[in-house]
Image (cartoon, rainbow, N blue to C red; front, side, top):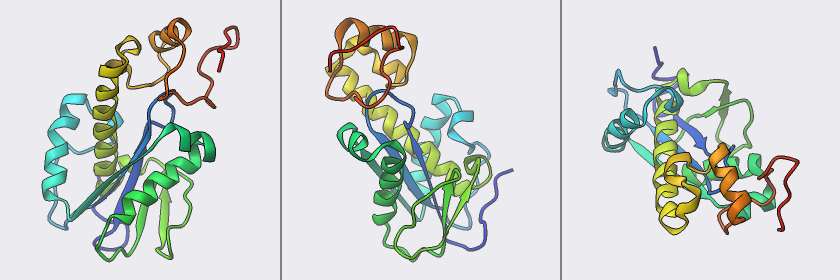
Length: 198
């Protein structure tokens, strides 16, 4: 059973999607849910089918006090590394909020402070708190939609299906066609026995 709050009303939950991908952005969402919010479908986005995430997305958007979405793109990921890029995406999403924030709830075990707002890192927070679960759903759905658009530009990588994750099919396409401007060059794009001319 997901909890509404950790300590206060109006806590903001944040989570990211796409950290382990070979291509595309890392995407973060931040969400404040009202005290009255309740939805039995809501859970960690990884535990939900794509169809259930699509059902939840407009519900979260229409019923939340606030939601913000941000992408950090491959060149910035390469410059600052994926962990810092994840923090940057979360910070950008939180920065869109005009509400007073008493506490930031972060999925995971690490975070860089945002301004002087207190924060709590919660391992598996997306399966414990509603606001983090809602953020995980939005981060995942917005990133998936973004990758589906990129698929139209580079259909040979089948990003509409693999969303940029390191599937066998994706790596075979990299081996065959090389890389695009959307690939993360600092990531291990192919197994050791293959080399890429970057």
